[in-house]
Length: 296
Image (tube, rainbow, N blue to C red; front, side, top):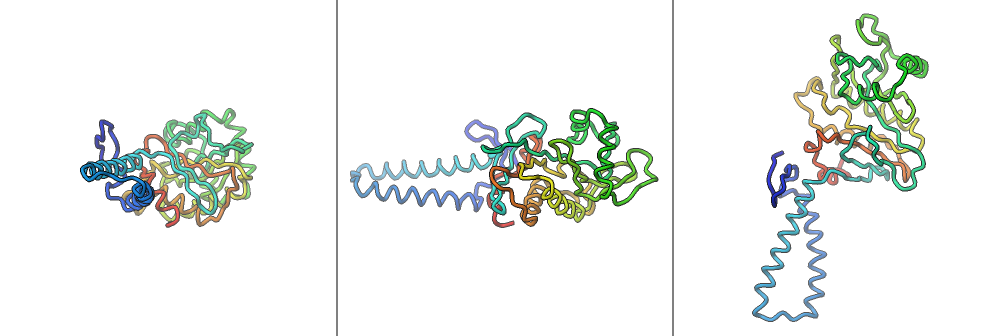
């Protein structure tokens, strides 16, 4: 994705100038304009000497219209899709900021998802958990008593523990299935990543897909008709084993696909909101998501 200057505005080019879906939308607009012009020309007689000028002006208007649509497509950072008759909004933001994620009619605060590792570690020391991650920020800013939090989590998830790593030198030892959710206030904390012996997060792609399927099943149990706000899970993870690189766009499309196959339905005004961090904004083609809405 290259940066280009268009009319004095620096813009990240994410949508190709000859993008098929953009041209399809443009021709839809063009057909409406053609119908309107046909009716106008029935009652308006253009002098012969003005016909060429009129054609040039109309041609320029059509070109400018397409350029405006193309620029808008590249600058888009907020799109709402209809998946399974549920509203899925993708936007740029930060789940910890005081932003309005509710729609008119929402009576309860949304549930915000934060990814933990498979041990639900709470040790923010820049070795196990970095203080710069959403996970680290959540622990430092939202958990006021770590010991009490750990006891509550152990009690709540006792039946969901799948094993114990007694050889682990740092961090917790109880291990949980990926996708397991622990509700803490207005937050849904989920076991997302596996940790190796050096406390480095990693996933195989099949682990990621299995996580998504189990995650949505758990969300279906606990969300209670409330809006669910989700960060782009997996963004920034460099160790997807077996894959050289997985882009943020691919992760986002997988997240949307997994919601579609889950068959969960959010009744209005509740919806799903996927939040893209501003650092990843230029890596996401928001316009393309419109074309995958029905084609996933």
